[in-house]
Length: 218
Image (tube, rainbow, N blue to C red):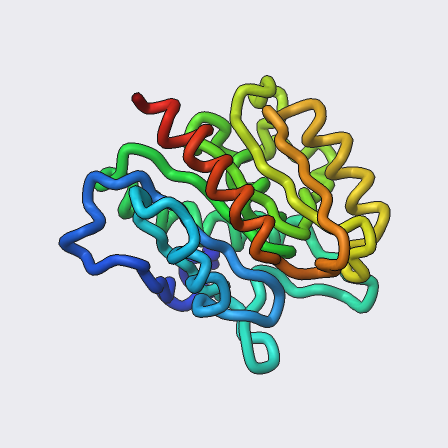
């Protein structure tokens, strides 16, 4: 059974009506554990209006919301489950990307794990990545993660609070090593944000997107 058979058809919310989306650079929002596609969509109003923004619902029901992959008590996960979820999102992106000059990924918490996984599996496909209060998965040399092809040219914004109580130190340590080696990193620390997103951070994300995606196309 493939991932496509196991999962429902993607539920996607857009920031703009269909007639206003074609030809605009795309941002794909990937929410965190137990949330849904509505969770990050309010960010669209605070991001540069030149983008079309799509928020994708994770495929696995979890409590009142949804998750990209199951977590164990220690906030651990199986790599196969991560890969299945990434393939689910990638299939959807492949179905719409012809309408957009570029695709940027923005993930919060577990959504950052998804965003970085998608980049690592398709290193040439994305204009930029934004990771908020999250982590990159330790793929243990899995050949579908093409890290060797990521030579530090893809711009990535990583925002977090050092006091984040959710993302464990081992995940931060792995992510730190990975970003330093593989992306063109903009890293910003925020105090008092905990495991969340604040106004200041979204301001920085907007500046990053303008510089890294919009201005790079001119």
